[in-house]
Amino acid sequence: MPYLPNMKTGHYILLIALLIISSCSRYENIKGVYVLLQAPEIRQRYGGEMGALADELKEAHVSLVISPTMEHGTAYYPSDVLPKRWEYGTQLLALRHELRRRDIRFAAYIPVFTDAYAYRAQPGLRAVNDYGSRNGSEQQHAVCPNNPEYQSYKLEAIEEVILILQPDIVYLDNLFFPVNPLYICPENSTNNIRSYCFCSSCLQAFQEHSQIVLPQGQSTADIAAEILEHHETEWIQWKCETITSFMEKASKTIHTVNPDCKIMLSVLPWKEKQLHSGRKRLSGQDVKTLAPFVDYFTLLPCPFQTGQFDSALSSVVSDLQVTERRVIPSIEMRNYRPTELGNEFYFQRSLQHFQHNVIISDWGYLLKNRPYLNTFISEP
Ligand SMILES: [Zn+2]
Image 1: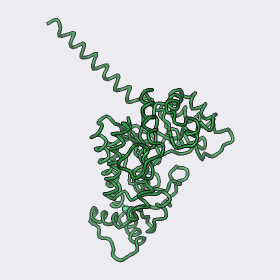
Image 2: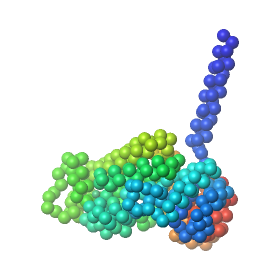
Image 3: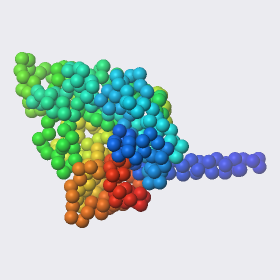
Image 4: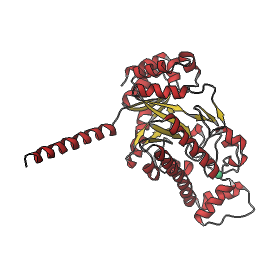
């Protein structure tokens, strides 16, 4: 049997090679950047030259580009599902193609429960807060996450994006109950953030789910107070199940079209217990139940501000690591707070701190602010 040992050796070599490949992909480099083709800086610099844009991203060692595929009812690709189309037609499709040629991964950014078009067109979709008011959701164009027709519309759009743009990753943003964006970054968050959604269909769904009978003939604010005071545990449970069940549907939709497509989900950059378990309580995101349907969690972008930024974000990253999913911090370049030492210093320090695992918002801002761009290019 002279061949048997050789075959065995062959198998071992194959096995070791597979192990090496899989361990490499687990720790792949993520130097990510948001690219908004609509931004004036991008339009001025590249016009429609998507190859030139992709070349510069490659030179900056970018390994992942995140680009919006739709916003407020307008599709940035040839769509039959969304009501409107972007005037620049197929430029996003061209960018996607140029990125693939340069081996840069492309993440299709899809905002889920925010949509100004749907918000305006269908009053029943507008999310209602614990004051019984829609004012807060109006600024964000935040729609109720519990509406079956809106959910199917979004799933159809997701399916279409995968078929047409063939992304490596689908990035799902705003897949949560509305949270005022002003309070998202840990330094600004308070205990006073308004809670959603108390629209009639959510109240109905909550009653059916929890078997709790809510008082009749009272104002929405009074019913909300009753729920938050006496049934908060059940309320949070229902919110988390609503979000997780949509995530499950989205994951199925995505993997039916492309089983290899990865899924990225943005979450509030808070530790689990922060603000009385604020992530679950307000957004309805339970990272433990979401994890089976997600490949990467990204932290919603926050501006780097002081020396505390990196360590604060790192502690959120390690707090979320319990799910064994990769957690990627995002840095918001706009609206930062000026510091005495110069912000390039802090930016550089953050890049070094989160080496090979960070997303920057965004490329247009870097173009306009060359010192940052130079720092971004020179750091790994
Ligand atoms: Zn609702």
